[in-house]
Image 1 (cartoon, rainbow, N blue to C red):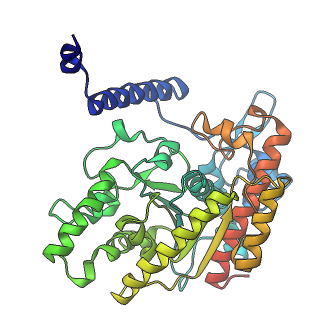
Image 2: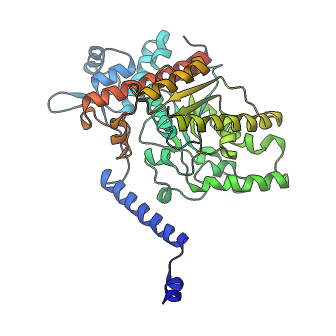
Amino acid sequence: MQNQNVSTAVSSDARISHHARQLSMQLQLLRERLFPPSSQKMLKTFTSGEAAHLVGVSDGYLRQLSLDGKGPMPALSPTGRRSYTLEQINDLRKYMASAKPKDAITYLPWRRGGERLQTIAVANFKGGSAKTTTSIYLAQYLALQGYRVLAVDLDPQASLSSMLGVQPEFDLAEGDTLYGAIRYDEKRRPLKDIIRKTYFAGLDLVPGNLELMEFEHETPTALMGRKTGSSEIFFRRVGIALAEVEADYDIMIVDCPPQLGYLTLGAVCAATSLLITIHPQMVDVASMSQFLLMTSDLLSVVRKAGGDLNHDFIRYVITRHEPHDGPQAQIVALLRSLFGNEVLAATVLKSTAIADAGLTKQTLYEIERGQVRRSTFDRALESLDAVNGEILDGVKRVWGRT
């Protein structure tokens, strides 16, 4: 009887594969239920007051524009309430930039001649540091401010892609990730053929999935076989691919894998700036210490091999922060004493509002205020805006803007 049980037992890989298929199918069904009928996510519309705030004009001015038939026409509710899509808000920005050319950069903040593309890599190999959450909130915030943004998902777990409406198991074919643009064989594709528009106007996506692991597996073989010249060595390939579409974007946000592999090193070399996320718990800080030591050692090797490691800024982002927690307060104070202004002054608060929105693969920038408790929503959004605004200020300083 014992031998029979052993022979008929299902192997662990088969069991896990079965579990993965079950979960994937349920996630697909959930997406279809949450976002019918096309199973595609759609962004909410914005009230005239919200639109006016984003554009930088008064609500009264916006009302007069619509009455005069100028700019995009808002949708009107039966009660006369005006609302705008994000696409229309961007059209308003273009209209205002044309109508007031002296203030054009205020309304349409795209980078100008001489301002180089900003590529911000978000990194940490400790799970739970809110790396992906930081990436998507920053990318959406920048798009809401009128910038042309490319989000690059380098994490094989593809959480960023999932949040932006792409289910990796169902929506992607071979070569539909950044791997398709950086692989070593003849199947390499132009990055512009891989980029996808998202439901969030101004925010495009290079999705990720498990295919990205192929780069980690193939790079040692390519190095040993000397298949590439120094111009296309592994740590330059991400940067070369991103440079293909440089003219189309102002800022790129790269969500790095949760390990210090070839993809992460490529992203760090391609980046103009680095964000390192920190959850202020002692075990996380101890892990980050090892991460920084390993990173410095590996980057030293890359730099000696010709890698460009002159970043415009490096900032530490405190995430899931509980300001009234004594031990957390001590750790945050320690980090500020060690790293000074390289730790962002603002922190991302731990919030049920962020978690609740994530249950439906949404962010606080996407949901209506009434979907979660208003006080919780406002407090969380204020902290997110402060963090993202501080990062944007760093980008503007690099560009030489006040």
